[in-house]
Length: 235
Image 1: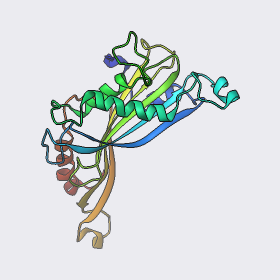
Image 2: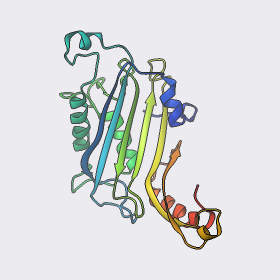
Image 3: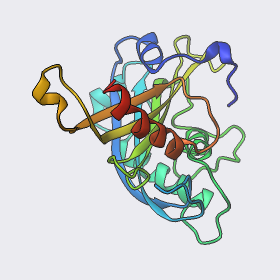
């Protein structure tokens, strides 16, 4: 789904637009291997480990599921969500030998549009997308993390989130956020004389919100952060 710039918001705005959810379903850190993005040295076409996290907030109360103690059509089963994410990765061929070049933005966009209920195809008319279903979902987010894509940190991730405050795709809002996790940079820090005699390791999580770049530029951004921080101090 293509979004005009007028409907792009910060991650905080998108999450708060829909208010407190009736229920939230999370699938965290699904492990897979993808041939997407670049590795920590900026090389393409390399298989690397990936973690996928998905969150869905329901648009309506789930009375049937609550009264019958079964997973009915008014809710989302976390097991089906996990299987659908992995099945979508398989369809894309992101972890196959013959996969073409795929950016992390391409991969997250693909998952958002292609994660469908088991037994259905994204070619269905219309497909029942789990994360793009404004009739059932009020808010959804999808995060792709690459633990080996950072030289000095614990990984890089890209998160796309979407909100349907009015229950319609036409009035949806979207956010994109690039994150560097626990980036370790030696720098001079402190105001006392003794603290200025040697560098200390600063560990920082850095978010770049409203990140709309389609290319894989995170290795270059990390290099700039590492270069600038020792000169100007931490953020």
